[in-house]
Length: 80
Length: 373
Image 1 (tube, each protein chain N blue to C red):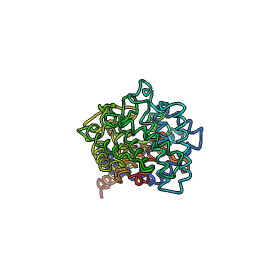
Image 2: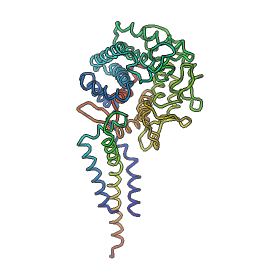
Image 3: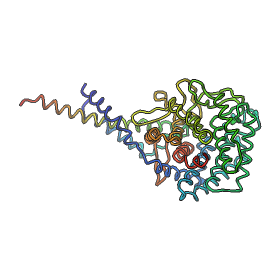
Image 4: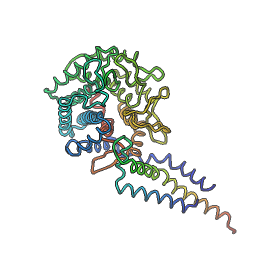
């Protein structure tokens, strides 16, 4: 896993979340209260919502940390 | 290996920080937004009809409770913010008038689950669920501003509830055939207390006796919490439930504040959860496990999270001035309630009109109770 891949995966999730948000699937999470709504759209929105708030920031932070570690180790391995 | 370490470190940084991004609006602003959305339902007949249809497709009780909790919340808001009084009173009057009309034309079973018609009630044919909540709507409206023409409506309902309770072996009346609910009977007790304050009647002995009887007959021994439902004779039909106990503690606060606070503390110890700045509530204490039903909604097993119990927990936390728990619950509501804003109006996509009305009441409760104590 490289920093670039982590950022790409995070961006893909964020883009998918933005898309389902813009087409109005948020209202379908009403399935959580047992109210009639599209189960498929509700679950998709739910998964992407929590992925956006949990996985995306972790992915971006991890990419930054990994890039920093790679840079540091690259610096320490290079000859004077 | 490095990547896994980076992900672990990022997780350790992000998860404890997440709640800072879900503080949401301050409680009074959130309440104003929910009130605006709920009031739209009572000024737009088409919107109201659609929302009522949605709720009744799942549960006829929600249609009724959405009215009660909204009316109670608006009364509290009118007491706290006089500028909202005129609009609030107009809405409460419309809610009560329409609810009484439906009760008159279709009977109380219109607001009950189908099994309310399955067999006769043991004592009479009235539901404490419907009588108690309507009585409290009328009482709180009169607490904001007197309506003398509604005084007989309150007296009549309170007298009928008190008479049924006094005839019951555990001083409780049925909400469904041979099924008494702590939720409904504590709402009835609060309404009776309100009637005493408004009209000078005296039911102090009934209120004190109910608490004495409940401590003896209606408490689940391992947890010390009131059970949620029982037969008219007092046989427990369920153990304690989050979807009942938080509201029951709040209602009992105008009947016996020490007992009410004790129930809140026990509920907090038994079914409240918090982690990483978020808070929520389960449906059952560790010592008793029931089954998901229409009241509890689905419970998320790994987290022990019940949306219904968590919503009512917000009421408990506000009523008993537990700011830390309230703020954690509000963060959870912001993350997992899926707020949707439309101008100044706020509603929660994961909820419906009854869930939003409960949240609104939770954020507004207080002023009426201070006058009833």
